[in-house]
Image (tube, rainbow, N blue to C red; front, top):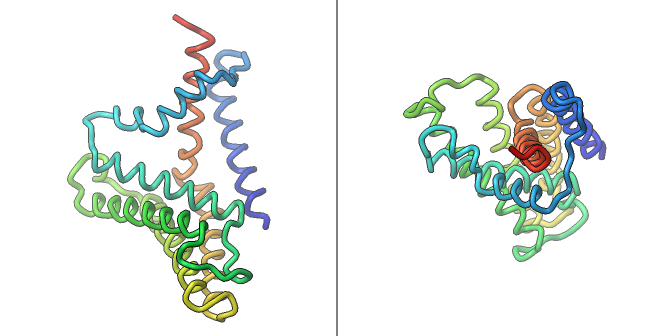
Length: 212
């Protein structure tokens, strides 16, 4: 139950530090905007990954993998933070609304994550030639968290919430999520999933307030 508070504090701390280092220390002004045009442009940039795609030669494989992982991970995060799944207290069926989120998150993370693994093993492009242990940890933990979420959900459908196997799988899923939060979040590039959209938002805000 402490998961939402812990992850929120980490995200806010990183964003505040980023804002101080990039905006406040440089401009000594408060740059924030709730303008619909700024929010719209920020969302377009994020959804189309325009900044990511513009980094050198267009790489559809890399861009597609990145988009799948981002959307799949955010869906998994949404499921976890708001406790969408209650596999020990509710019987799910194949057509349960929660299933749509679970199935998409799992497909997106596994497809995107395994694609990234393949690229790092092939090493055919500069972006995938050099991998640190944290890079493998990032992808590996993504696959484990998404896979354990799907396994727990399927076990609930097939065996019901009172089956001891469902309890074991759910505890494993929670353990993996906790490991993710305490190991991957503070010490890997994971946090850029929030820093990058925030940077795009600040850039659009400055463009609006400081026109050339």
